[in-house]
Image (cartoon, rainbow, N blue to C red):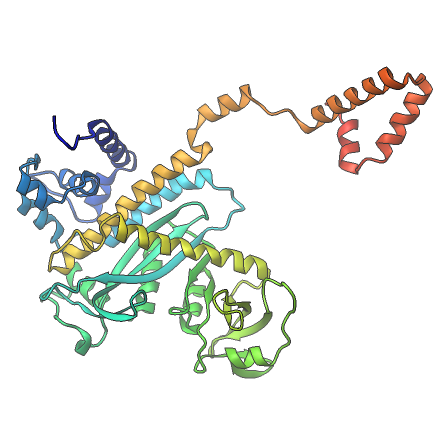
Length: 457
């Protein structure tokens, strides 16, 4: 008997869930549309399914080969060739897949009044130990407050407040050659591989707009764009507005960025110092309307809130939707925290930076897309288990059999019990009971009176 037993039943359940996800959302057709088709040889879906399920096997491909537990019909070089394929458009693939999940599954479970948002943020993709990896640069790590060798993983995601799905992402290198450790491989400028590497050396705000355009082309929609102060430049916010999205973002405390206020051009600190703050336990300190941008300015609202980490300090949010209240702006911006949880999950559990040791930029892009798909599988599974509406007709059958008593019926039952008790204890006459009932009903709120007068009651 082995010391560590294999949980075969659990593994079979995971494999079954992955296969159901693949067949339901037709990942094979999506891969073919994005340039991953083959005329002969090992099917692409077989290799892709192996890479997706590898994380749930609790062993890497190297350990499977080393221990002799690798049972696939292909060799390891087949996996490496698949990852290094420069013709597969992984950004398009993840955008189309997330669109199918949102439009075909999540929107059916979401109330039409619920706000849907795009969330953009970046995180460190560490490759410190790789000496000859393609296109790494110096990236500041906000956790250790040190510079690391690697990339900035710029990610665009969609959220309805309950579920967050990654849409697409880009591994950003530095725009300046002196900050890059290695240069890129040479490709024809017309190929996807060359365009992918050019995008990695583009400014992050411009790449963000490209990711938004891809998401809208794939059929994804939202009402607001959420991001932190790194992307909250007036030019970027205006460009997002031209794409039909309002912005809710954290504002950087910079004296170089000015806003139109009171006929003058003032920075965020000057606007704060010239206004009287709200006192007491208010959720925000100050709210003012400003004009954003020098050319074709758009109206926006600045909301100053207290910094929880330093009560004497303040933070500022900007919103281009003037119809939203200050409390609603703060509440919607709170959804941005979901992408931080996403990065933590991908790095700690889905092997974002620990599984792929390839030197090719194409391989790292492919691995990032594979991690995105793993997260989508977990997100869909969680929503199916947590949301009762995902049970479909079973829920409605159970709901009809175990229907809650209505408010009108409950009021009628309570009043009948009250009047029966009065008759048993006090023995009033019919006239006294009618007078008591009419006087009692007149003192009830209007909605209770209407419930008692309804036909059901």
